[in-house]
Image (cartoon, rainbow, N blue to C red; front, side):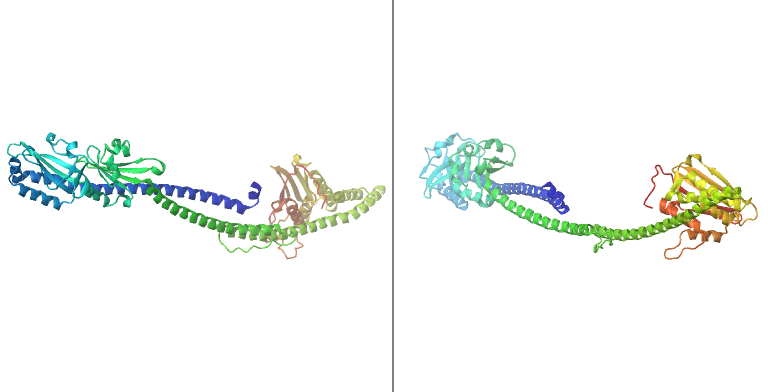
Length: 588
């Protein structure tokens, strides 16, 4: 598998880009789903609390209304008179209470209990056939206003569950208790409040708890048969602090979210129960939306990634194919660069490389041709002296036999000069051999031109055994003698310097001849590097040959440097690297 990836840049880029983008997308989708689910639950809980607050506002109005009605009835003079003398104003009071009951649908009955029950029966707006009111409460023990627990009554409407508000009815003259007033609320009518507005769009249940946390009303009537603790254990611990809040009850499929809202003035509490299935359904919808968004993003990312990788790798593959089909004898094939990005610039660089290589090949062929020509010229210079060397050797022995010493001396120096030119076909020699070759040349020229010149040698002895390309100094000495000294009327001096400068050895050939003018010097310098395609000038042929050989064997920086002033002399110099280890090139 690793090798399969390693052989293809496209595969590696595809895997890397897909992994580096898909993993963040998956994390982002998970994070978005988690945050959205939490926000959805928080909003649902807040909406539930707001619904409970609206229900509480309606119920608080009913509580205040009931208390106001009780105060209204207690303050009526007819009621005060009836409590003192039950036979009087009975019809008026009953009519007043009946009107109040009919105007309030949640009030099922108003009853006045005289203190002396034996003297008079309770005055009620409804006929109650059966009730367990007296079993729960001893009304004569009530000394302050209160709300009863939920109890049953039976009227012409049937069996009903109710709870009552009871307060003592006292005389406003001496504040003595004259009886008790009871206002009864119908739980079935009251529970309509819990249905509008609906909690959790009708999926939730609502229960009303009194200040003793007893269930007084509920949307689910089965809850009315038992205390709230049997339905939701530890509920009292959760609702005893704060005016509102929520907690989770149950596990798994039975998990429910419990909301509560406490009325601070009365201590009554509304409990809302929302099944977690509602949140789960909403979360599934969010999960589906998130999944669709992530899948679309993944598919889009895959398509874009593959498109980008293809755009990047296709030109590289084309370049690779071109490089594998390179023919050394032919120019590099050109690649069409039609873009300005990095790939386009790479293609342009490849095309420039092909052009540059072609130019270098042309230059190399030209340099090799020049080198072969120079070597041929050197070979010709060796072939001709070979014949002359044999002839001069014969003349040298004849001169010795006839005791012609000057002739023998000149012929011997010339013979040694030609022997070095041959040098067994080798191109390199030591510095001492090159200087001996010059001395032989000077000896021959001294016999031809006696007392016309002197040659002075200043040589760094460290260079004697160092190898150099042969026949570099003699053409320069010959050029100084012919063009400098011989054109001078007085005796001339040729100075030869050789010294070591770091990793280079530097040579100078100086003469005090007639020198050159600026124009002549310019012409000579230009003749060293003739333009391509133009024939080389015959002027300064020896120096041009030396200059060309230096550049071909040591590099372009090793050419001749010519300095001259008219009537002051000429200096020709060059520097070549010191060879650490000499190896003769036998291919030449």
